Image (cartoon, rainbow, N blue to C red; front, side, top):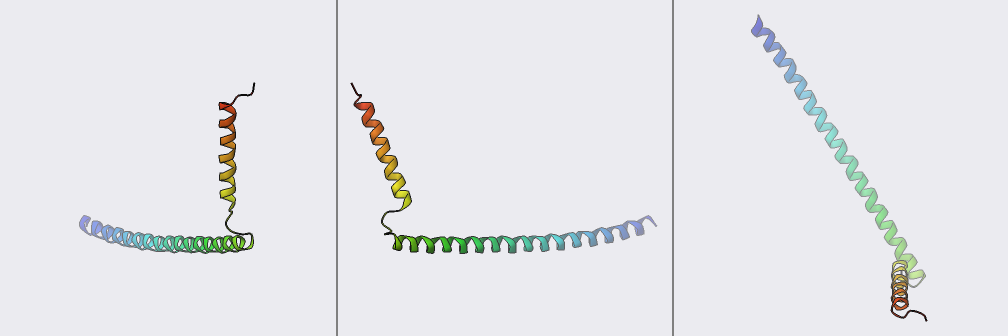
Length: 90
């Protein structure tokens, strides 16, 4: 009798294990699909921003970007600070 109980328990547990495996596979594939969708959305957004940047660059003369202006201002500011330190006012 004990062997039969163990055998029936084993069968039930194996079924549960298979069900859990299937559920894990389903969840994993759903998560993969969701991540792919997020990636596609981000790529679309990146492309939209690139198009917008190109349009603005052509409209406002793309040779002078905001980052270049900011970098140049920082460089000039640093030069001024350096100059004022090396040439103190009397």
